[in-house]
Image (cartoon, rainbow, N blue to C red; front, side):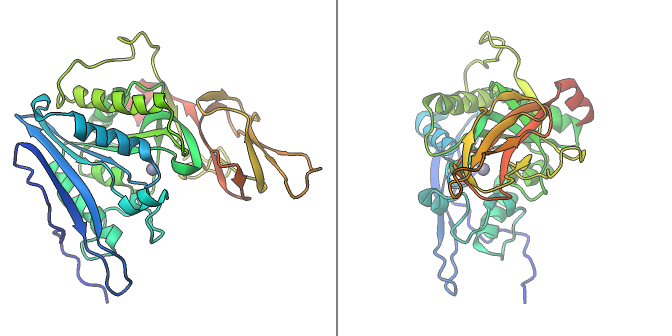
Length: 356
Ligand SMILES: [Zn+2]
């Protein structure tokens, strides 16, 4: 029988949010002697000085998404408390075992980003999620969670957001998302159990990213991870230095892309990451359109070859509507029914601010 839920986290907070300067600790999430699951050890660092907002920065929500992990580690290494007005709470690698194993999911097969709000007496992953929900989020004004497509794909490097209903929160999140200065930003929906959903429910300004993916991180993507993260921190006034805008860099405005498919017009589309197109057959996948490209209805974004029947014509993977190709599952081996592409329609910021 399930125990009655305690409100309070049973995990001890290894850092003191009231203390200035630099602190480092380890969040220890108990294992399970019955199933043999080992204790999870999750490093946490705080850098605090003076007065200002508190920003929670996390990488490695999904283990094989390393761009944000590297940017967060660099932040810990390079930022001195004297440069900070407020507090940075940095968890550079949330899913430590998955990161080591180069897997998106925990060794248990569970997805940390589908484990919210969590439970204090639940499975290990739920206990850690609950620690975020009841200890880390309440301490923060701003929550930055850094993702990419991980080992299986590529999403054009960008920041994005799960659009909140509250117009004030939405505007603050839009402006923070734009401070990343990427060429694209996109909007998505979710089932409500993601890390950003819980932070949004608590009224936080939430900034999230998709910084490329696959097993090789290009130098320019890691540079964007760093420039975007530090510029967002400057945008909130928690890190010293002037805020840079796309205009000040001589760049055109970013393209805003709406990847929320709740209008039922695009076929087998749900809220899954690459659900805009599903593989009609299995085989070997060839990319024919790079993510970040405009796409028209009926245009192939890739094709699937048949190694079992080499004489068979390849099957095109076709965009169901006109918009932008934001991401692709790029792993060359595909199975029938697999989610393959993230596509959205351009949206202007006034429409988003007015209607959500
Ligand atoms: Zn992710």
